[in-house]
Length: 296
Length: 269
Image (tube, rainbow over all chains, first blue to last red):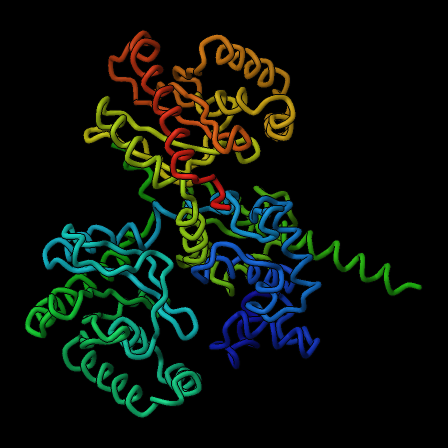
């Protein structure tokens, strides 16, 4: 099938983010390399997802164009199309766009019963309630970690303000390090070159902290980060790998530093390792399969 | 001379590709196991070769992922991220949720708030009572307008102009049965006109009984709809008329009132 053939030709750039791909292809004007990639669809999705990638609800056509790196006329046209299809809403008053309710019809409900989130959610609840922490399932999006499922501790005073869709940096966080640890070596190398660009100023310290994280994962299965990210948050995380080696996620727990001393973090880390193995086993056993038949 | 024509054609193709790609995502329904290119082609009416390129692109972009030994597709993380981004940015959800949960707890039923999308209502908020037998409904769920209490109340409240596009979508989806479905829906809308709320006693799913009530926001320029329902367990219809419907109607007006008080509108403009 053409899809398989294409994947072979594409392995050279397997690590390239879709956004970069679209941009590169637009600039080069060459499509021969990846003939099966539907550019118009790729661009449209970039425009659409620029609204979920930031805290901004409303954006002007210009802002979207800057964000996705497409020419303004192209962006305007795509915004118009997405609006007429109901996926975006346009305010005459604000002269700005935002997500429309039709995005929920793109399989949002369909995804849930089979999703990893469903499988993971009970474990996150258990972790959050047992240890009074914020527990999450996260995946990688370029140089960020993106929260896919979160559970706040019942004691809401101590929780972190990370919701589904929130982003935290890949470098310098326990969650990020757990994700990096599970990546193949070649992909790690590639990431380093990009992280170095982003964190040019503190690269030495950041690289040391990533390497420390990788060593911790190797030695004990989990990694801890003290006062990472916004400097007042302690985190502990494990990689969660799909059978077959991809995709890669992380399970993580976090709390304000004073609520998560090293001893407690270590205890959580050990539990996280067990939980990750349990989930991976369920994935192998087909726990990911259709459960809709089990109506109560 | 030829250049603008070529350009126009290219732009038209662009919209077609985008529409088709999104149609592939829409082809997944709540009860689905992963789908192969062939099944997606059947559901969307697109050629299999076209579907293969679209699924390939959607997978690369994180909207689909391949699962199982036959490399079938299921929805990817980006779908969830997009949905949650929308839900976060709908102020009505925060205002409605506590009110709806209180009603769900009071009667131990499920209560949902939805908006029309083509031939369906899509759930924006869903609350269930402490002992509610799961109906596998949730935010993002689509229920057919014509057969549901929520949809009937919504259509009635929309008025002539607003309901036309939904009626067209309903008739298109119904195919040969379009006339019967339209007639049935109009009859049910007359009931809303008479009572102020709608009912559906096993019309959508045999085991589900529900009442529905419209919600007017933004001085009537945004219409939503509420339902309150349960799986039938010895509940008689009189209870829906006498107790649930009045409760749902006051929930509706309370919701509009609170939104006004907060100076909040549906789109957060």
